[in-house]
Amino acid sequence: MARFTRSQCQPCPDRPRCTSSSGARNVGFPPRELRDLQRRVRAEQQTPEWKARYEVRFGVEGTINEFAHGHGMRRCRGRPKAHLQHVLTAIAVNIERLSNRSATEATSSPRPPTAFQAFLDQQGIPRSKSCRTLGT
Image 1 (cartoon, rainbow, N blue to C red):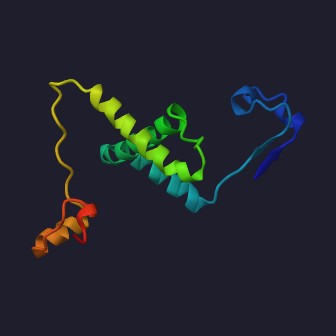
Image 2: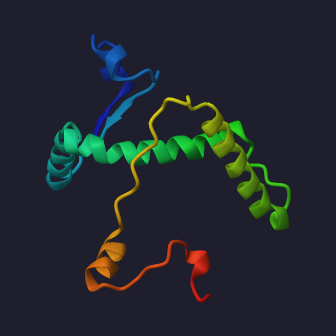
Image 3: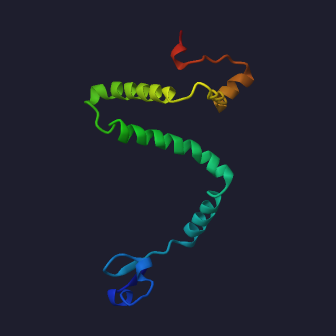
């Protein structure tokens, strides 16, 4: 950690780019291993493969943000009613999204099977279409 006193920071010509504080400046330096890890991860984040994987998370976080800020999901109507509120809000959002789709818009391709579903298929084990049909 490097610490600079106020008298050292005030006359510096790069001070506005360094800090907006009127006091002193403290600068921390991570350990070499952490710095190398940060560099490697930041370089990986620029690859098309990483960006494609991140798109999924980006969509999920956008949906969560929409629920929290656009539909008041941070304010539930009591604990017993919270689940009902979440389910009904999700249904409403899905209806809204479907109604905004154009009729000529192509339907999305089905999701690829999960690793577990692929395993079941390879073993010839039938799998149900829904978890609700299990045990029936």
